[in-house]
Structure formats: C-alpha cells, structure tokens
Image (spheres, rainbow, N blue to C red):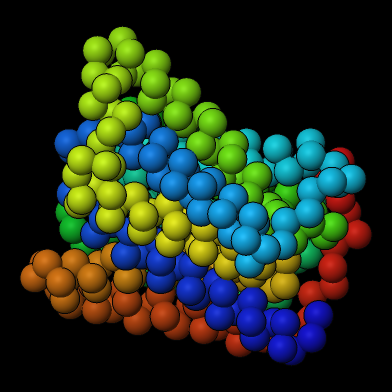
Length: 309
C-alpha cells in the first residue's frame, strides 16, 4: 500500500462520514411521516438508477462478467440489508441514548473481527485512538439525556446491526478482485430489490400503494431528500467507504465512524440552533483526538491473504 493510496483512503473515509453525518438533516423531517421501508426503498432505487446510468454512460466502469457474485451478494446482505433492518427496528424499540451507544461500538467490533479473520491486529496507538473515539461518541449521545428501555429484542437487533456492519467491512476488504464501484453497484441493487419488496407489501396491505409509487414525483422535499440519501450517501458514500476499506483496512476506516455523530451534533447546533454543552465540547475533543491517534501511525498494513469464499 503506497502513501498516496493510504492518503486517498483516509480522505475517502472522512468524506463518507461527512455525507452520513449530514444525512439526518434530510431524513429527520420524513422519519415520522413515512415508514422506514418507504425511505429505504426510494433511497436505494435512486442509488441503483444512478449507478446504472453512470455505468451505461461509461463514467463508472463496472465489469462483473466472470466474477464470483456470491461474495458480492454476501456483502450486500450484511450491508445494507441486515444492517439497516437491525438499526431501523432496534432504534424503534430502544431509546436514542441506548441505540446511539450500541451503534458506536462498531469500530471496536470491526477491529476485533479484523484481527481474528483478516490477521490485521491494530497497533497500540490505533487501539487507544479507537477506544477514545468511541468514548467520545458515547459521551456525545449521553449528553442529550440518559434513558433506558430494557428492551432485550431491541438490544439484540442493534447488536445485530453492529455485527452486520463489521462483517460487511471484513468481506469488502477480502474482495480484492472487485472495485469499490462494483461492490457499491451490487449493494444498491440488492438494497433496492429487498427494501422495495418490503415497501410494496407494506403499502398493498395498507391500501396506499398508489401514493407510495408517486411520492418522490409529487413532493419536491421528499425527492431532494432521496437524492441526497440515494445518490449522495448510498452511491458516493458507499464507493468512498469501500475504497477506504480496501486501501487502509476495516479498522482504520471505522475509526472515523465517530465523525458521523460529531457532524450530526454540530450540524444540529449550527443549523438547527440546538444547545451545545461543556460535556459535548469535551466529547468532541475526545472524538477528534481519538480519530487522530488511530490514524497517526503510518505502519503499512499488508493486504489480507484471507479471502472469504
């Protein structure tokens, strides 16, 4: 891995987290007005259409002929399918502080799985940096108030989402014969198919299929929301995440995950005039310091010899 590739990987990891961090501004206004399956369906439909157009125009080379599709389908099964299902229903069954805290341990789980499956143990600095970043994210979440639901199923679903995202990172790292764009294309296709099937069943049972089918074409705000989530997060964000994982590894890539929560909090403060406390300031410093420490080491990581079949 060259220094240039590593630097691009770091920039891609940061760019992806910035996109994810601002996504709440677009999804928050619709989360209580339409179902989760409606949001996810149109998000990935727009992502799939955008990826297909880019491929047809030869702006994004996607060559899947002759490549094994099963590992790519496994990748998409972990994320977006399992991850979003676990997160969506887990968040509904638990409190905001609980869900935010559990989701924040993704970097820790990813590092542990990377060390076990890919033989890529973190350096001491990276482990300390990831730990500090996770502590900062937990503090940011808890600064908004501590509540408990004690909902065992909700906890299990959130832990399932954490595990699914970590396994997605491992599988993505192991797929060295496919490009980030090719991985993203399959992810968007599987997401569009899976979540749209769920949304269609949901709306047919409720008798609201016609409204669902024309929603983005009759509501400009919803259309803009889905363009950002679909094209911005699920195309650009996923491509950057997959590139970062392939170039700097799953552990270092997920060490930037705390930036998503940090950007979400700062966007709420700056754009929505939400309060910002001293505890949030200290937590912000922890997140930034942890991310810096986790990526301060220039130790090259060898490409994994282990491939998931």
